[in-house]
Image (tube, helix red, strand yellow):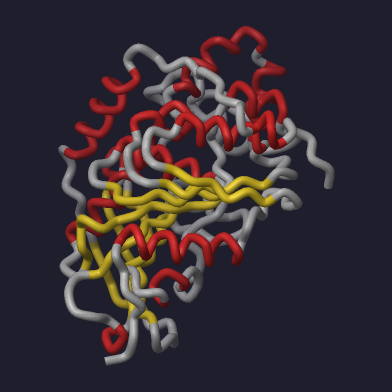
Length: 331
């Protein structure tokens, strides 16, 4: 797989001045205020996974419009917990992935964190299973999720997704065993883009771990990514030739490279230089625009899988230092 985007020395300078709508923050403040008027309506039911070092709970909470959103909450087994409330991390999912089965995604709980694995509404039938529907319809759209409601910010699919994602932090803050002042957000691909958006939209995010993030620099992504999911937008515009301006205006409200300008939490990015799903220039656009302290790990010979276990090792050391987490040991 050759490098098809800009060479690294140009990527390190690539900092597009993406336009932000004049009413961007008014739009999001109104959206989140409307969501906050609804009760969170959290349910949390223990699940027997057969694991002995991690306790798992089946979680449901009220997301955008009151729709239920499902998640798994993984906690270190009680015998492995130290004194005091736990630091926590919220994980958002890659495109068309769900929260998975209850014994999946137990790395962070095994490392001493409370770990909330959140479904993405309507998704979860591509590579891991989900259990959250999206009851909201849309006008004509390409198959997939990228163009659902794309002619209006009010109707766009990711307005619901980002709202759900910010509500997930409140689920952890209400949990009696979680330290609400030590919550990080993370995700790979789509999950990384959602994490960046949440870092700008939600209060009190302490750290951000966006891996090969999607949903960044839509104008360049749609011109350079050779396939899906950005290809869904391209095919839509191929048919709807008169919708170009309206589509990119809507996308500007949801571009993580635009929203991230308001973020202030420390962030550890990753990028893969042979990535054809999320072109590295779009990741660098988000990285350079990001408003808080930041670092980036570069994987020159990887496609969209990025750093995988190597990046996870980097994340764990980095996050422990930021959230002041000690290694969990048996009592």
